[in-house]
Length: 101
Image (cartoon, rainbow, N blue to C red; front, side, top):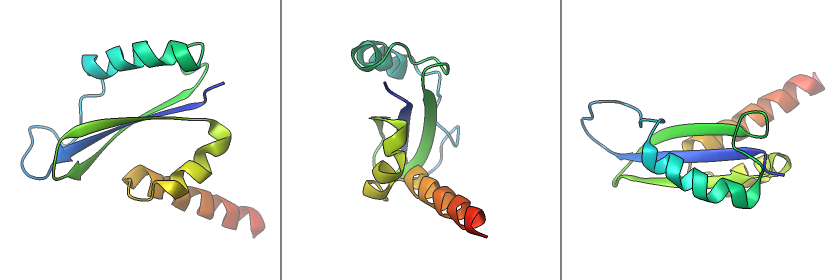
């Protein structure tokens, strides 16, 4: 079963009307509608977590990652170029440190 869907939006550096990508984007929803039935029951929060994130880049594009929850830490370690992957690593490291102390 699928557990986590990450949609990462890269925005060009510079002035934007908004500092984040419209997470209600119909293009992304149509892609999810095509992919999700192949990998899980539904993309509703009952079945999986959904994260929509934005970061700056030289170009504008979107990436979609589908990751099993048990593999999230390893996936983040393999994608350290992504802001939210680094945030997952930091969170995991902090949580482990707190559980030890």
